[in-house]
Image 1: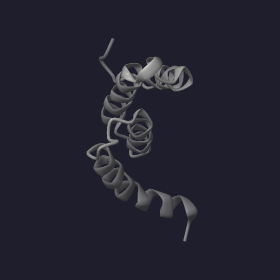
Image 2: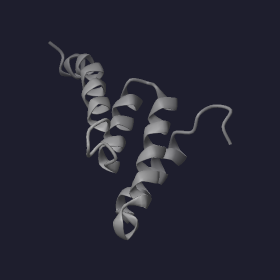
Image 3: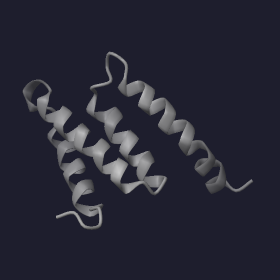
Image 4: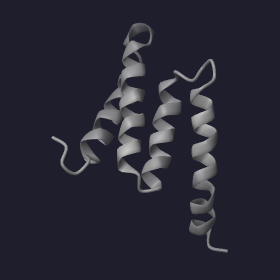
Length: 88
């Protein structure tokens, strides 16, 4: 088997588990939302990826001591790089 094919087959399973993780007590964790967005992007769903990254950014900023600045910068870069057509 092709390694890329194996990874592609695993993407929907990853989304399922990451979505479940967002519904747990720690579901508000910005890193979980960030990873979910990354997998959604690999599945070519830019709109959903952006929603997840936006949630991650909002969640990080709401965390104690204003969250993780490195994560926030990374999320802002992803949102800038992966704009949805028609969005400003």
